[in-house]
Image 1 (cartoon, rainbow, N blue to C red):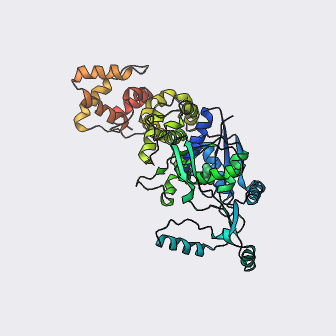
Image 2 (image 1 turned 90 degrees about the vertical axis):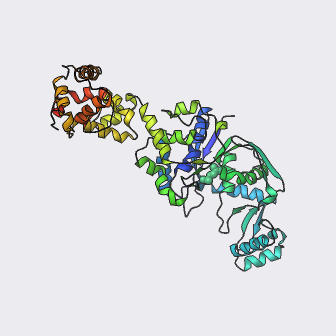
Image 3 (image 1 turned 60 degrees about the vertical axis):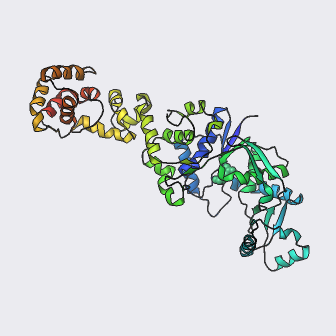
Length: 446
Ligand code: GLU
């Protein structure tokens, strides 16, 4: 059976780095097995779901390069959920409850006070028809709970290994609210079943949910998918990525900061594995070595330095051809330039700074104690044409004529040629700066 997975975000907010993780993991899982990747918008919450958020999700996924094979919206499938709910009602597995949130809260408090787990007591199952009619006549509308069987769900998790959830310790989950709207639990099962999803890969905040959902699959006589629960990202403070922090960590913000999509993909796919150190250039390469069983179980700390490190590592190995168009757009289309500056970049946009250093104007720095040396260096500049060996022959000459070496030799030249104490290899920069500008700068002119 073809592997089919889905990424199922709710368009009730922007995607942040944490919920980008199931997107990347599902996509790679499908790709690595020639499978299908479904994008499913979990938009049953009609008040909080917006088109704008849905568009944002599509944009983020397109930026990451995670193309989907199919797109579904839960809001277009209510009749499927109604049909499933009907089946569950007929089987006696979905029952109406009339408690108000306040009443439920009081029950929970009483249970806790007596040292009992706050599990729903199923009082609604004991209501007679008359009592129900009376409640309805008072204007109460039911919410509907799924009746769990008192058993333990057990599955062989793709990431966690054997997982057991004791359903006796769970409240019967509410599947339909008082206003008739669906919570996430049932539509998700119906979709996974009808869209032939073979593998449900999602955050480990859903593990308990899976225990209950397995019983819903069974009640609807559906084949069970495999499940994989990945660990969640936590913030630099060791706490779950909270709303407070999300502003900085939305994929939109990360994109706006100029990070490469592959740095994000690598971070989300590799963190928690032994391969985390080495970024890969393409999704195909990432998919080739992808094995979901290698993912660790522990929480993963998201640190800004990590994405910077991956982004830099990625740029350092990016060949010119891969960035030619982007360089051309910015008027910096030169293979030699890219070779010279890429080892110094953390963000692609940093290339512009080095372009400026080459093109000028720059303010040459010539310390008084180096003035004679720089004058000698100017006189010793090799003839044209200049190439990758010019720097070496020039500095070899200066080494023997002046006795200078190491920093004492290179730093005054760097300061005069670029005005800076750091930067790309001068052997690569010098031919790009060229004789005319080099002469001017060594003469102290910008
Ligand atoms: N909409 C759910 C969420 O974002 C989907 C969970 C799932 O993948 O089943 O948590």
